[in-house]
Picture 1: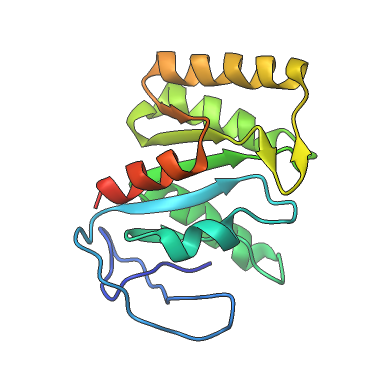
Picture 2: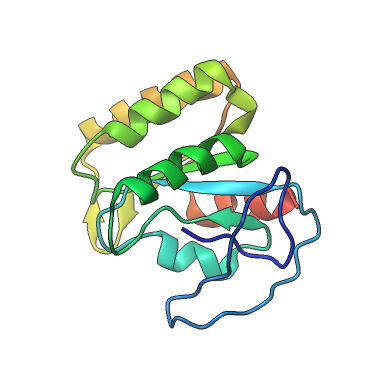
Length: 163
């Protein structure tokens, strides 16, 4: 549940900076109005642990130790307030809700959607049929006006270019 950066992005959002070692730090963010919601696969190993140190823009990480009503309300608020929503889908995914969210948002607010499918992640892979389906979803999102990647590093470069 944290954003990086020293100032608030657009609107009145309270946040802190978080890293996996529970230490707080400032980071240089060039565009304070850009914020990305880190959605997608939540199963371990969590892609967020890899992407957070690479981001140079504000972000919101919805993963918390204690998922309760307050955390859920905060997540819903941040989904609306962040300028972009990243959906990273990995082979560790066990529930398709993030895919449904990405498609839904691409219909409602396509410029906000960044959909990324990682065919391989931590020694797991989607099979050919699953990837065919993921590419069909990606084509649907792209057709709606969203941005789609099948490469982690390309997604990071794109995200950082927003700031």
